[in-house]
Image (cartoon, rainbow, N blue to C red):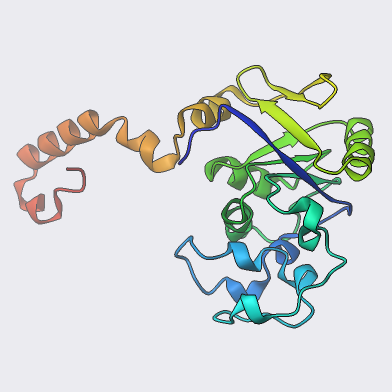
Length: 218
């Protein structure tokens, strides 16, 4: 997982509440568990004018010109601004996969659904919680100024606006440590590979008939 320390990026405003995971990545795209290729189908029902299915050539599909991510001024956006209860609905991990594969590094919203919130951290996506008042002000600024960017400093836990004002946010210490160092669940486990190997060696010495199942950690 790529480490997240600081990030400055263009902001795209998704001005709607209760965005559920089926809207983020519709159910028909969940057939794949490869963790790749979901970016083109992010917000598929909002982004395209036709019905999307796996395997379609998205470059030939009609785009919805009214959807924010299709508007020229928001091309290349890497920070998504959203309203409250973002990521509600089913627990699909494909939702943060689709967001990161599109190019988003962080989301800013007043609140999130718990499972989506947790899944985001595990996939290197930073979900930032700011107050509804702060988020509303950001919506006004993003819509009022083309090319509006924000800077996120994870170490200091602040979002920095173009005018220099800083908006602090809270984050669990363990999650912060993992993002700063690019640790996902697997890399965290492999930090203890010496202890795992020692345990396996001791286990085989006591139960040699298990040798055929050994070698899980090389």
